[in-house]
Image 1 (cartoon, rainbow, N blue to C red):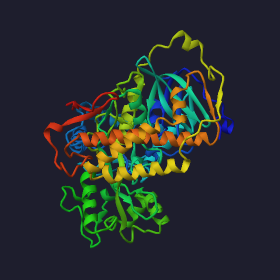
Image 2: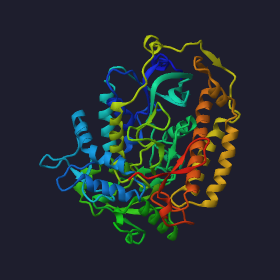
Image 3: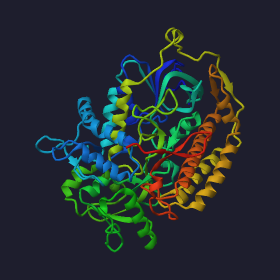
Image 4: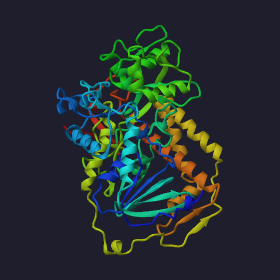
Length: 561
C-alpha cells in the first residue's frame, strides 16, 4: 500500500501551524480548541477509528449535582493520588470540568439523563459522590464520535489516517516538525508546533485493556527528542478485565461494581472484604487483593457477580458489555463472569505544565501520553477523559512562534527535493522474529514489572533490553530513518516498509520499557500504582515525582501544593 493509496496525494511538507499526533479524544479536542485560522495536520497510525478513548466505558467525572462540590472532587482526586497529585493541576481540572461538560453539550454530546431531565450520574471507585456522567457503557465511543464529526469540519484541517510519526524534528533546541511513515513514503513535515496525543502504554504488557497501538510510542518519541518524562512507574491495573483462554482482555467497567456487582472467589466469598471501600476501593488495592486470592486458590481469575443489579437496570446501563459477554457464551445476569487484573492506564508520561507544554519548546502533549501531575500515583476513576478535555482547552491560547516571511510565502504542497527509492534496505531480522520479540518483551514486562514487581527480575530485564536496543539501533533501515535529509523524501519498497514498521514498534517499545523499568527500580517504596514486595510501604521522603531526561541521571521533582 503506497502513500497514494485511495487516491491521496503525499502530505504537504508545510510549514503547518500545528501537527497533532493521535485522533482519540485528546487529539480531536485539541483540533477543536486550537485558535481559528491555523493550518492543522491531524495524523494517526490506524486506518481504522480505534483509540483508548473509543474503548472508555465508564464515563466522565465532573461536579453537576447540588450536593457535590469541586472541593470534594479535588479531595477525592488527591486521596486516590496517594500524595503525588500536583495541586495546581487538580484545581484546574475540577474548576474547569463543569465548563467542559457545557462545551460537550453544545457540541452535541447526549449524556444519559434522569426522568426529570437532569444529567444522570453514577458512582465509581474512590468517588465520594455520584459525579460520573455517562452514555450507557459506551461513553468514550459517543465522545469520540461527537468530537470527530465536529473536528473534521474545522477549516484548514487535514486528517490523514494510517500515518505514523517515526521521530520528532528538533532544531536549535525547538521541536519544529515530525518525520512520518505514510504508507511506503518516508518524509519530514515542518510545523510551528507539535501536539502529542498518542495515548498510553498498556501494550507494553501482555494483559491489557488498551487497543494495540497503545504501546508508549509518544513517550519514546518525546524522550528521544529531549523532553522530560515523569512518573512512569505508576501504572494502573484495572481489576476487572474479562479473562478467557485465547481471547483479548475486555474491560468490565468499574461502573458495574458502582451499580451493585460484587467480586467473589470460587466459594462465593469476597476477596476485597478487608479493604476500605471493598469492591470500590482504589484500583491498585483491589488488583493486588485479587492477585493474592488467585495465587492462594491456584486460579487465573475471580468471579464478578451481577446479581446485585436489577436485570432491567443492567440491560439499560451496560448493553455493550452484555453483548460482548454473550459473544463468548457468557450471561452475567445468570452467573458470575471470570475477570482478572490487566494494565489499563498510565499515570506517567511526557511532563507538561498547565498549558500542556512540555520541557521541549514547540512540543505539547495532551491525554494519557502526558503527565500533568493530576493523577499522582493513582488515577481517580473517570478523571482521564475529563483531563483530555481540560488540557486540550488550554491550547486555545497556544504560544506559537511568529511565522517567518518564508513560512508565509512558501507553503510547500510537496517535498522540496526529488524522491529516492530505498530498494535494497532490509532488516537483518525476519518479520516473524520481530513479532516474536515484541511479544516476548511484553510478557517479560508483565511478569516482572506488573501488579507486583520483582526487583531482581526488573534488573535482569533492564540489562537485556538495554543491550538489545543498542543492537537494534544498528539496523540498516533504522539508520536510514535517522539520517534522512529533511528535504529528501524516501520511497520504501516491500517488504522493507513492513520491516521498518516492526523495527520502529520494537525499538520504541524497548526504549519505553527501559524508561519504565528504570523508574520502577528508582522508587524504593510502594505507592499507588507502583508496588514492590521488597518495599511494600510508602515512605515520606519519596513524596516526589520521578523525572527522566535523556543524557541525565534519573532524579526527582517536588510535588506542587
